[in-house]
Image (cartoon, rainbow, N blue to C red; front, side, top):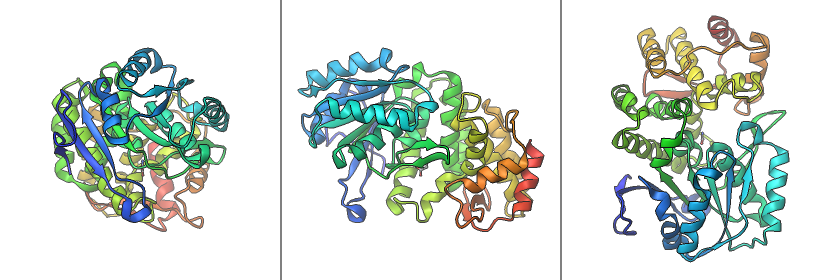
Length: 382
Ligand code: GLY
């Protein structure tokens, strides 16, 4: 699936392309995820070659706008696209709410957008999820290109078409499945990312090894240091591999009726912790997932599904890159955390459904997990 894309275009940089084709499943056009160094400089061409010249509206946030907005506007303009007034949202997970969705939709509609226009999401997961949701709603659907700038968005949230906002009922509880028309991953954007965010994104990379591929987990153990320290080859390899795993899963099960649920490894524990910390900076999504994966492997070992050695290997690797392996101080106890887990949208008919593992690379969806066993793991970790 990962291949050189020289036959599609001739950019001056080496690129990898992963393709997602859901045309059989839902008639959405196939799309490419193009990965490379300094790719934002080619964004106008990459879009033009696949989608023709468009009226483009960029959605970004207050962290990213000063770094890339003017440059992106210049390359789009130089490639013959027409720019509509861009929208800059406040940075941070707390922006993923009804208020900002409302603001964004109003700005999109006021900009004079039409069905042939293009929304460009330039930023991390918050921008991608909000812009994706707005794109799916405005005029019953405007095309969107994702240009993720964080490692987490590059390896997970920009790919596969999930959009959403957080509500009182939990994380991503209002959203749509709406596939982008193109994903442009410029690895050089990672240079401006704080180490904490790099680590949080790394949790989603290692997740693919834990779910599907023990050999990739071993690659992660050998290369995590280089990747986090800016080694381009390691970054590109890990991002291309992650997008490839994700593409396979999304093509097999776009709407999360089965296999896609595996991508939620660590997420049900993680979402409860994120909710308990008010989706605040106290715990980033990737950090919550990292802790959640350690807990899922601990629970798997306690249930005799995998060895304790494997669960310690997972914990030790995650700790070795500087990610947390225990929850931060939480204002609530086990009862409330259990309630938050049950509230998670992955809970079916009140029963706890969790992604557990029969070993590293052997994740599966476990239904009817006994509450007492889950409580015991929380009690151990708090
Ligand atoms: N982040 C999980 C998914 O896209 O399904």
